[in-house]
Image (cartoon, rainbow, N blue to C red; front, side):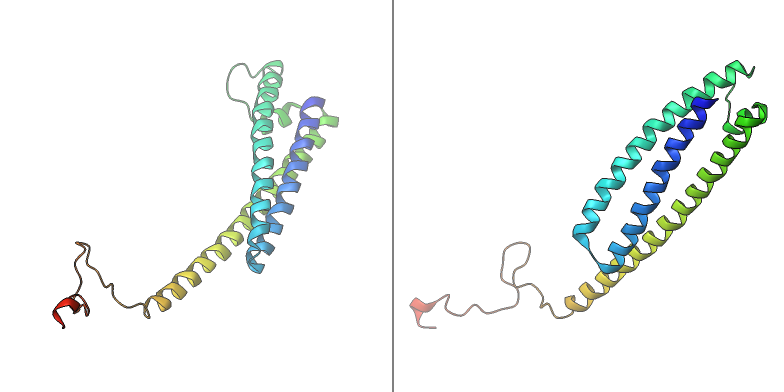
Length: 161
């Protein structure tokens, strides 16, 4: 049980770091700090890879503890283990579970905000490009390579035209 408690504590640290990075991402999006965004994306990917590897390890620990608690080969959840854990570990596991769920909710909220800000920026870019597109004249050449509705002066200079 102690191994699971310590493992969840490691995950909580990474989730806390991820929340911090996502908050930095929000500031960078609002301030249009594109160089900062590249650094943030790299940091975020690094943490997400660590979390993915810890997730696999947590599954192994839960499966092993589940077998020792009599759950057999069926899928065991953290809640199942908490329900069978002895009092000193039960409270710590429940506290870690609650904290991780709160972190996940915070991550979802911050991601939603970042998504909203990014979509708003893209919409502004599309409007600006659409506005600028109104000033662009139609093309001179057709896709066939021929000149479109235009008399090319100087093409017959040798004829004096």
